[in-house]
Image 1: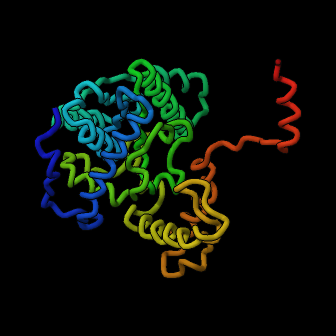
Image 2: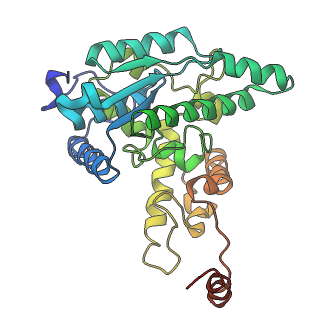
Length: 309
């Protein structure tokens, strides 16, 4: 059953280490939950499937989906925890605390045997390669559950991850819809407090759980506060160019002209180099696959031969 605070989303008075709580995030909750219900109807989905990691992004998405479904969440929401052999014990504890606090429908589907088999066959694989494999196995299982329950898989990647390409293509980046892809990571922290996500989840360093003590900020070399400040500047610069004929292919594509280093002289230049490099290198992850389309005349000639009258 949905938590009693669903209607008012009372604010937690604890101060955020990232950004001050913004009343506009209350509006975000309203519009995001409306988006979820509309997309569910449009796609004729009977259930929402979410992969819980024990982290803040999936926790926020689970709560948004629960609020969107209201009293129907008991029968129309499914949260799946898919631990690998590298998943920390704390991740399981945090996932279960979230589930118990909000009475979320939950199952556990371990994938440890899959990643052990992968490591035995590819003995020279590193932590990143194993992590990518696990991300894709998880998504394959989530799509299996969506098929069984006639549901849709809900994405849990935030805007920071999408722009940086900090995710696995056809793994955690795959989904039918994504209700938090327009928010930067620092905004997710503020939203989590409004949604009363457990403090244990909010306070811990963001991590892909690839190996013991691994953290996103450790991998990236900068805090999300610093990264998001630059990403926001890049994104806003990109939106200025949207009136030109060279529009982004997706809502998360960035204009090449917005990736000029000289525009961001007031930022740490090591940070600028890292962020611009990642955006350029990973833009393909944010685009649909390119499909070769021959000239219309050739297509008509080819297709005409198929018509039998």
